[in-house]
Every structure is written in C-alpha cells, then in structure tokens.
Length: 186
Ligand code: FE
Image (cartoon, rainbow, N blue to C red; front, side):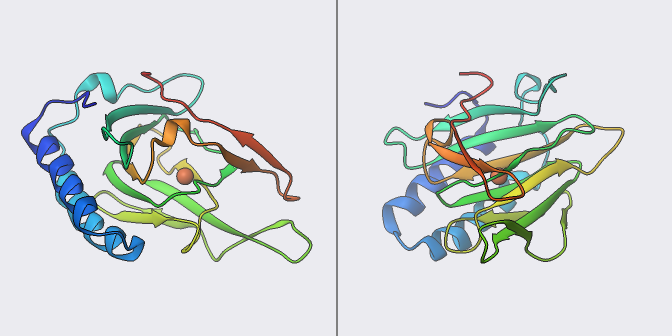
C-alpha cells in the first residue's frame, strides 16, 4: 500500500522489494538498504506537505508505504522543536535517514541490575546521514529533535509493519511498558 506517488519514492520502494527478495541476512539488508535510503534522502523534493506536518502535542509518524506482505514499512517522522521519544525498542531492523534538520539519538543498554545505562555519547544525525537499529546491533534508544527553532524530518524503514508491532518503552530503572505506535495517518 503506497500512500506516496513520486518517481523517486517508487524507485526506492522497488529497490527495497528487490533487496528483500534476494537477501535474508539482516547485515546485508542494513548495508544495501543504507545505500538505497541514502539515495532517497539525497534530495528533499519528493515528500508531500501532508506527510511533513508537525503536531502540537507529539512527534508524528506518517506511513508512506507498507509492503504487501508486511516485509517492510516506510514512515516519515516529523519533530517539532522540543519533541522527544521515550526510551523504546523496535524488535525488528530499522534504518533512519535524516531528510530535513537534525536529530539526537541516545542508545541504551541494560546494566546487570536491569536498569538502563547510556551506551556511549549521544549521536547527532545530520541531514543526509543514516542510523540503524535492530536487536542484534542495538535496539534501545531515545530520539529528539536537535533543532530548537525548526522542525526536523527523518525517513524510517523497518523490517515489519512497524505501526502494528508490539514493542516496549522503558523507564530508567528498566521498567517496561508494551506499546503499539500506530500511524498518524492510519
Ligand atoms: Fe526508534
């Protein structure tokens, strides 16, 4: 189900379909998928305004494309200044490409007592840059808009219908809460 008709986006979706048909290794999907996403976000001329609108209350997650077999989904995340996610996981592989503005991501790992501790320093994702998550490479993080005066937008690709995946948000002490994100435009 494609919600976005643009040659550049169609090319990206077809590239991902071909990739997932030919490859099952997560590592290779992330490597080659990174190149596809880099090419998609190299130009910022294909995302319609309706998928780029900020929300007053919370960051928005617009579904752009859902694969017919739910092998992958593509989502635009739109952040107003000050908006931030809770610490959360994904449970599937994901790629994040910065289309507009900048984000700060902080990864976390679990300490021996089950609480969360930062996994290194926060990472600034700049326009055109790509980040990756998955249970095998690091799946728990929080993300926020790095800009205090402008919206930021990142394009995410996940190895599932991410809006329907049961996953978790976490408090500092490791307390876990199951959530299903849905989509802003579902
Ligand atoms: Fe995330």
